[in-house]
Image (tube, rainbow, N blue to C red; front, top):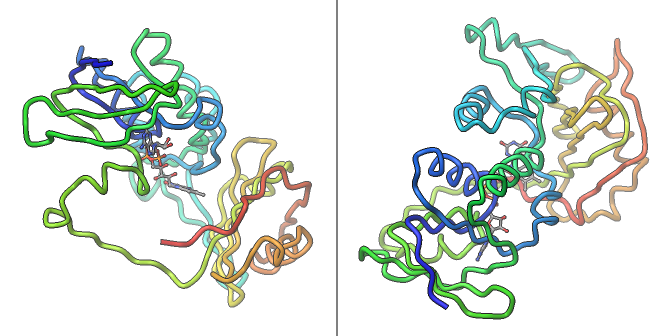
Length: 272
Ligand SMILES: Cc1cc2nc3c(=O)[nH]c(=O)nc-3n(C[C@H](O)[C@H](O)[C@H](O)COP(=O)(O)OP(=O)(O)OC[C@H]3O[C@@H](n4cnc5c(N)ncnc54)[C@H](O)[C@@H]3O)c2cc1C
């Protein structure tokens, strides 16, 4: 089946969804193609901290109502160096810029709801397979939806399908310059069902490796520990994670509250 639109957007992550909303505000038609289910896209745990420019852009896009109600606004962050803590007052140093804790999954949910409420097209479980005619006025995205092949003809293609998507591979190698830095360690990022132990984030340097104490809400803590690239989850039982966090975050003068882990990743993430 052949369909037409002005902008074909591949990927319903924050980039594709926000672009779709900004285009909608300008009266430009678009179709969003997403290969995962809505449920999967809305539950993927990723980022949780929005910088001021992102908050400002979401407000401009009229996508910040819930963010403004529920986001946790922080004026500063804490840097910990071998147990010594130093607070950086971001708001004071920048003339009012702050960071807001609001999970990427929530941003994605808000943008999907806006799109659906506006009756604009978004297809889940629709996998883009090829992009053709990028140097013509009628580019084509081939995609598979409900087991059927479809063609989307569009004036522009926006490849918002992330690092592993097809858009990146479609750009000729001769036109691409890749700047890459892969660090020789991994991150283990965990969500714990325990109220955050401090109001602001703690980024900790320690001889054992980096650790981060962050949060997703007043009930959920987000914690990271740096680990080796060869580590698997079996190397990191819950007790070891808490013990390392206690050491790396340095608990002099405050208490790191422990609680049950709610979500652990299937493996540590490569740092890049
Ligand atoms: C564990 C983790 C923690 C992170 N923490 C932070 C953080 O604290 N702060 C921060 O700023 N950033 C963080 N990031 C990075 C942040 O999540 C990404 O920068 C962000 O997700 C990029 O958004 P995006 O829309 O470009 O891509 P993505 O979110 O990757 O979205 C791409 C979408 O395209 C879809 N797709 C892929 N291929 C196809 C296809 N062929 N057809 C149709 N759809 C397709 C995918 O399913 C996906 O939904 C983190 C990332 C990870 C993995």
